[in-house]
Amino acid sequence: DTEVTQTPKHLVMGMTNKKSLKCEQHMGHRAMYWYKQKAKKPPELMFVYSYEKLSINESVPSRFSPECPNSSLLNLHLHALQPEDSALYLCASRRQASGGYEQYFGPGTRLTVT
Amino acid sequence: KNQVEQSPQSLIILEGKNCTLQCNYTVSPFSNLRWYKQDTGRGPVSLTIMTFSENTKSNGRYTATLDADTKQSSLHITASQLSDSASYICVVTQTNFGNEKLTFGTGTRLTIIP
Image 1 (cartoon, helix red, strand yellow):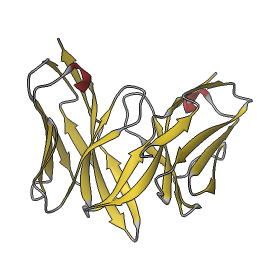
Image 2 (tube, rainbow over the protein chains, first blue to last red; image 1 turned 60 degrees about the horizontal axis):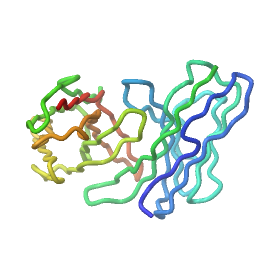
Image 3 (cartoon, each protein chain N blue to C red; image 1 turned 90 degrees about the vertical axis):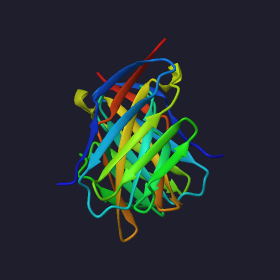
Image 4 (cartoon, one colour; image 1 turned 120 degrees about the horizontal axis):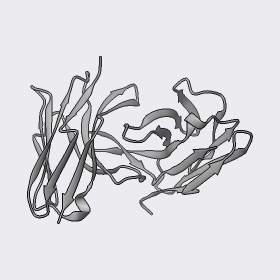
C-alpha cells in the first residue's frame, strides 16, 4: 500500500455543523500533515503530527481541531466553520528519502461551507 | 524572505510538443527541491526530488535540472500528452532538527491541446 487516502472526497456543511475529515496511510510513515489549499494557490500548512504528537500548529483557528489516534490515522474535526474556510484540504505523510524527506499527498477533501 | 517563484504562470502547447517550466528560489538553507504535478481538485503527486549535489534527474518524459549556485530549477516535459494538463508546483525544503519546512511555488498551469 503506497498511498494516502482521504474521506470524504466532497463535504458540504453549514456553519453550525460538526464534521470530521479522515486521512489514512499504511506506509509506516511517522509524520502526517494537514494542508489547506484555496483555488489557484499553493497549499498552506496547518498542522504537523510527528509520532502521533502535535509538533506544529500554524496558528490555525480553534474551529479546526486535529487528532491523531494512531500512527496510521489522522483526523481533522470541524466545528462552526466560516464560508471562507471552503477549500481543498490535503493530508500528507512523510518518508525518509535519499536527500531528505519526501511527502506523499492524499487526493484531498473538497469542503464547501454554506 | 524565503520565496519560490515559477514561470510562466500558465502555458498552452500542442500535444506532442516539448516545454520547459522554470523555478527560481531564495530559500536558505536548502535541503531539496521537488517538482509536483497537481490535477485540478486532486492532491499533488511527486515527479522528482533533487538534492544540492544533483544537477539532473529524470522520470519518464519529465526531466528536472537544478543549479544550486544560481538557485534555479527547470522541469522539461518531452512529447507532451493530453494527460500532462495540470498545475506543476516547485517546492523547496529546509530541514532543521528533524522538522522540514516546505516553501511552495505558485505553480505553472499547463494546458495541452490536441
